[in-house]
Length: 624
Image (cartoon, rainbow, N blue to C red; front, side, top):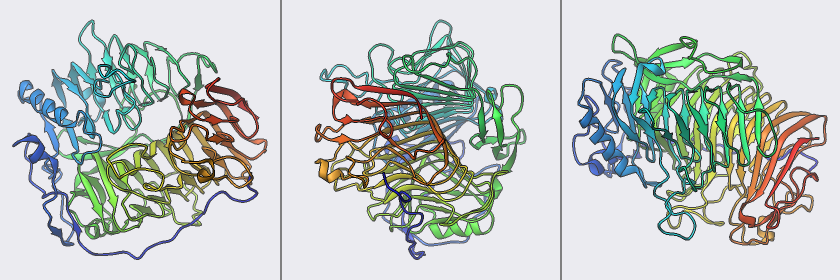
């Protein structure tokens, strides 16, 4: 192991550019949010080839905001058949649209809706009530595994391992009597602040399908949950009134009720009774006067159960009048001018190209995306830079690296940040990162956390292992690291980091805590030599590196997997690499050789058995 800090604490900055940027479609006005024309053209937000010039910061009417053509706002007075038809059209467009540019948010005003909603790629289904039960869908809000081939049989389409980038939040769903719900997803598909009244719910296709991870957060479920083939799952601050059945490698329950008993392994159930510190994700709602507002939940400590099922959640509301509503053709200069004026940001569904970094310098700023709003830094800068200030919230956005390599995609706090944010930490909720896949993308690393006390609440940090031709490959979508944490007292819940080319995670800060970690090492090292060494003669790079001089760090429910399909002879010396210090403790670890393709020689440091063709999982309950 190295004797020095693992990875840089800082990185280069590039001069800000104030050029206009090419847009991905003209902004059009919406009234009720209904579909007005042929779906692929009217809603896709295609590039019109124009140039957008910086303009004065526009005001937002909080009673009739222009949320763009891809936000569909529904009212219970509308025809249920019409709403169903429009949602079906969105799903038809998005069902297999894994790397397309179309984005959608379907938002429901308080009331009852008899609907069967299938949720496809880049689609957000959300209620506009202050409480989840203000909006009730009598039917389904579901994700099926029904499009991706599994194994060699072209007729077996039960594979959920690529059901990414979608979500449901802030509403209740009442399943018809005798039926069950299905949420067959993998990464970046949050199910949060939901109230599900059902006989039961399945987290895979229900019979023989593969599935690879997901999140329940701040949710109440009346019926049973069957996890089936789900390889790993985080359940945080959720009330499981009907219990939980199932386990594969890494099921983690934090601050939840109705959980299975703690056991590891077989079944692999990691149970942490309380969530030490959390702020739930901000969300858009409409108040009784018809004004759009964003609710910002309060910080909770030692939290058990949901924030809302015992009464109104603690927190505060911000009128949408205090937000800049950002469309795909809004110049970056206008975004930064709005932030300088003290405004917050609401990104509409679409692909937003940036010609300079977004600079978040004011405390308590909210940056909220709808419909998997996607930010692409085109000029080699960061997408977002956050100052070392209190209480910034980044939520509901996908950062998609550009072809010109960025030093990092989001920087939270500049190098050397040292302020105390313990009373009001910055938090990241459903923030996803992508290097390649949809287009060529590169970055040194994806997320750099320099500030202290930051909370990560469901992050998927992904270097593409598949995608459009020419967008991925060992020498194509290059990225060394996924996450570098330099700040002290940083807490991560639901940290998914995959396929980076060196350490996936580097943790330099003190007193870090991680509750659930899932990683796949890079699939594509062509040779052992090409993948290199972490510096001490070891083979390859560990998935999770705690720097050698860190004295305190703790993690619960962590997994590292190999699938070296380009060269199955590749070895990784270990899944986790940490200093030998009494304050550094890991609980319930697993390494997996997926299908026996490649080898991880040890679980952590020199402890644990190999995971390889003959014995594909290796477990360790505690280290040291």
